[in-house]
Length: 334
Figure 1 (spheres, rainbow, N blue to C red):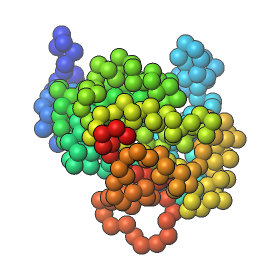
Figure 2: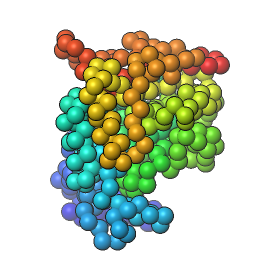
Figure 3: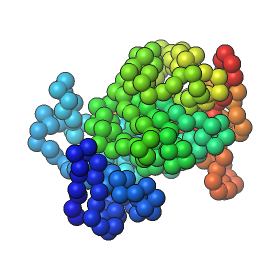
């Protein structure tokens, strides 16, 4: 496969066969968007392959050090979640934790996958029904296709997205893989912490990418459960919502053990024992609904993520989802 690049950094490929390089289903997309997009997809595939190379010797002591080294010997939240999603950007230590969680809470792997599908449906809803063309995704995690910008820019090519995460592992992947789907679109990454929402809102990445006088889609997918009550997740959310103009949406999902409290608690304890991150705080359906205070909670409300506007009928039976999700709309002053 040969890549040709011009002086501006744009590129093209010399054969349609190259389009299939580790990027399933993208041949049609490349045909739609032209040769420049084809080259971008190939570059994404190459970057993804490079990021999968294990045991990089330059990683100091397999730890995340101040100079940006990345640890392989300790599980990371983003990589554990990637493993639960069936991704490849993780190490055996992350896979072991994911498997341990699944043994204690068998529904969690399907729940994680359904949570990702819920995010995609929520974004499509915001674009189609609300006319939203700009998004702030906090706690994005390791890029997993389809990414938010791929969904939004596939519908509105000029859509703008700011991804936010505080994990240096995510930063490494995001810089390599989050490429705008169209030339007129924007896709930006900010390394910052949800616990400091004002720093997020005042960052050049947000102020230079999003027009805060127009509706914004705020996406908080499976992130608020990493904040314990002492860190005031409701207060953090309030700062973010207060900055949004009328017509904005809040898409929020959260770990919930209501369907199987005992197993969920065992999985949460296992997560904590393995020092993946701060403990996951399981909250009840009612507690998750309270995050939407001041917003119009759109139908069907806070529900198991597989039952929020599903693309196909959901089989009848008991609720076994480990995540609840909902979508709120801001009217005037929330």
